[in-house]
Length: 199
Image (cartoon, rainbow, N blue to C red):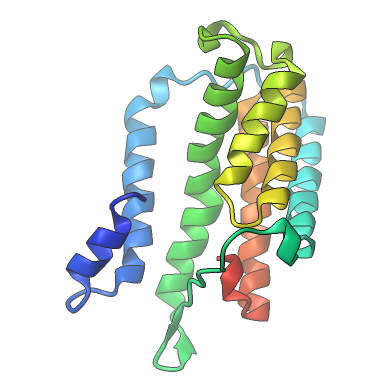
């Protein structure tokens, strides 16, 4: 993400820079796959938690589109527009949807909840069960998560929801599902409304 603007300038002229999102997603997916054996996914949660995850994911999506208000955002939207020659590019849309709904939730939840939230509770985070994470660590990690998003207040609430789902379920797969539902719903909504600023 840091070098993407530089790469976009480098490839512009012989490749559509929008495809760099796919390159970034594939690189992240490769890193996840290489190190997957060492991850602590937690104990498998009961089925009911997956219902909670879907409900929470839809709820965060609702908050995301409703809280796009001037005093709850920072900066200007940088729309990711999948239009090519006046029509939507299906390959670009597929790449964006797959990246945001399948790759981003895994990578972000591994970092924000599984690592950072537990590390804020105790530096030996691998020894911290999700259910033992303090509310202080939940709030601080959510505040930091909020700074990564233009819709900072929606980001804060999303961090609190995802973090609490993780704390209570003890299963990283559950919170990944919640995040995936949010991002998938947002992608479908963006495509239906043309509100590219949310992408």
